[in-house]
Image (cartoon, rainbow, N blue to C red; front, side, top):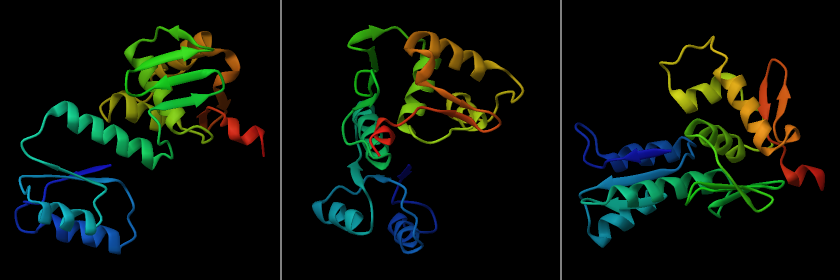
Length: 178
């Protein structure tokens, strides 16, 4: 996910965007700029932007647009992610198990959300650590194992698979029907 300003020093943001698209890069791009005419917006979208937001803007709107772009890029048009009986509403940050609300810490929520956004795919411990904490976190810590264990206690032991030496995976319910 890229938030791109069009008024960059030295090179126009639309030129960069066109180069990305010509090079086959398909990450979601939100243009955030002071250029606010309808012609500017059309030019940005035609250059390959997935969304366009003019300044001034409300931070809440920017965050909602980023969440929507990431959701769609992950193949989720709805703000509600489902995996078995677990549902996570990215709009309200509510998690339910078989319709009953679950209370999660912020770290548990971020971990579960990331796994659900990538369900069906093995997510490495390093990738989870980078997503939850960023680059400055100590890699040898067992915090991820503790978070996974706490989540399993809340959503059930079979909700998150361990793939030794590779990472963790939330099974995609669609896999069972294939």
